[in-house]
Length: 462
Image (cartoon, rainbow, N blue to C red; front, side):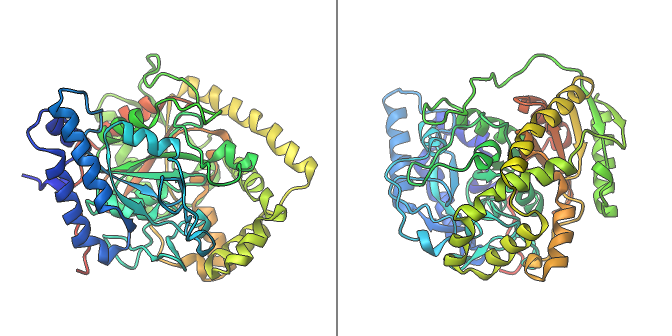
């Protein structure tokens, strides 16, 4: 039988609600697991033992009173350090924000609490949450529990590493260019980037984000089972009036044909043999589960949306963004921002307006494609997980990373949901994409690809 720290969120909540086990017992098991493996991983950079125990006591007390404790009753979770959590520093991996304490919870944190989740601690991110690698001068480096030499992904590398190692059943992450999907892929778990407007989020302690960030950044869950992603999505998606982008869309959409378009090389990108093998294996699994799968070499555009995504995202650089990066003076973050600005210079006003205009055209093309193929099967990345720190090896290395990450960067401009599903060993996974607010289709197909939960991994070097 799986140890308590390895239980899925779904099983944990069921057992706590049924009073087979107390939230206190679950929390103590989760804290013991964190104490055992986190020193090797540095995934959780701010443990919250006292707060976790208080939250567990509140869940047990609610149950004793006969009250409903919430859908995540007693489920241990982690929260990324780039979102507000009352009493904690929203560091975003920055020395500049080491003491930037939040007074109120971000809506996504508030929703986790309301659902009865137990927050174990806060997880690491690269400086500014802008890398597919996770280290910074404030909190240090986070390691992949499968292989210390591989990136744990980024920017939600701490969340992925922690969840893969059994520090919590659900990890909160954020995604503006693959920051949920790639860490899940790198650490051998599952990660859901929801539709823009699905999960409310807002940091009251920081200035309002530029429009690029508002249009593309989302919060979402990472987990070791697909049903746990479904459970977490429902809990995180509760209404909060502080997010004007939130949409009251149902979690289950109308019936749709079980039809999938397989594209091995979107926009002609190169993919490694292992990536293609994983995609074709996934296609076979879907067929065996009753899905119709049709291969295509042509999808609606991704390369130009990826370029425009970077253009809108980087528009903040001449408006104080680069000055902030220079003040932080974190070498990797500075180099990456310089590489990104070289690849995609910040737009002038006309180019900025053209990018926003083009967004509607590309989204329309994708919407029409989803009428024929409700789900698309494509790579998470064109390569298996990168050696850790590869993006610090010069401009050419960074160019190669950007090209491989085309499936990560192309979707956020359009606000579309994407699901990274691990289908084998670490680095063996695929991405599923669907129309707006059709996370239900992604999870349905994901369950066909990964019907069994993943057991926590012990760091190989301990």
